[in-house]
Image (cartoon, rainbow, N blue to C red; front, side, top):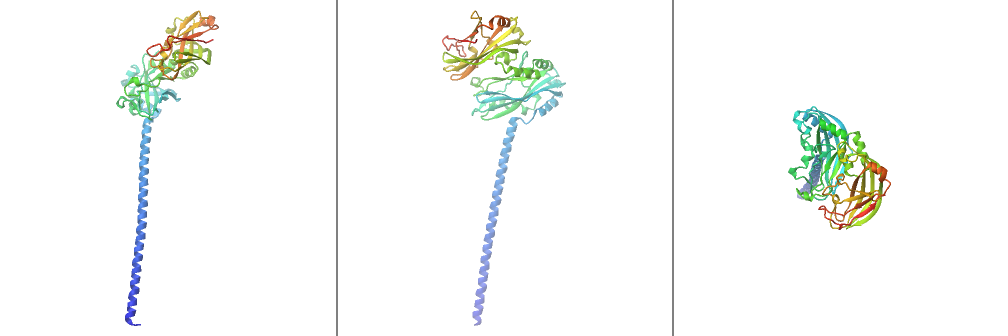
Length: 430
């Protein structure tokens, strides 16, 4: 083979090896670049996921913190320790109750979740004024929750005034005993317009201080009552209130527990709700279900209770004309208001006829718990209680075995306007 041809063939083979090597290097470079891109994309996706998780965790933490703030971050033991340190006094738990009480008001509810009665002794004189100028006494610490399920913003002023039989004043929250951020009055306050947003739940604490003299007095009575005001639909417009005002009853010792439990069986007239004395059942009948039309309403006799009543020391003067004991007759009606006007429960009058129609007495409105604002709206149904005070000796000797008739009407609105054209209806009890 000619030498030139051999040289040419060798050159061509070397060129082919060089091209193949370059092509392999380029392919390897591309594969490496592709793998690198995949790793980078995976790293970025992982980083993005971690960021999203971090953001979600942060949001969850914030939401949890807000919920915790609303629910109150302290328990009673921490609050009592704070109060003891703040006042330089000594504390002792006298009574505690963890059974919740709840009052519903057309979508806004208030619950008394728990409360404790704490003895507070030998505290600094700086705290004397709300304790009746004494340095020994007690404090009721109450935990309340307000919840708005109306679907709209509402406005709620937590004026939970406490009272008891014989009290000389109404007791309200004393702000210097607990941390401000734990108190309901700083969560629902004037600066926020008492706003509770749609779907919002707010929990906080309240304190009721008693000087030593007042503490002994309330413990002797054994129960106290807390007013539950109604919410507003419009800020600062008290005519926009909705729902019915309520009341919580607080037992303060074993005697109070027994009394509260016993009162559940009685109709909730003022004598029962305000714990004006002791009721003992004589006779009752429920589920009577007899109905009569009156104007644009239907009135149904649901039941009645005859109870022997012994007023307490504070209320005794009110019944001093009943020398031979007292019997209370409380009658329960249900009213279906089919008219266009509201019916005011406090404006309805009635008359009880006894001794086969020879004697009568009028309903005792002062022993009922109705306020001016308590009404049965058009198209709504509601309860009506009527109460009569009987002398026990006359009841036992003459009246109890004879007929009792109750005349109800006319129906009236809040301005006492007659809604049933003077008409009345009569029910025979027995």
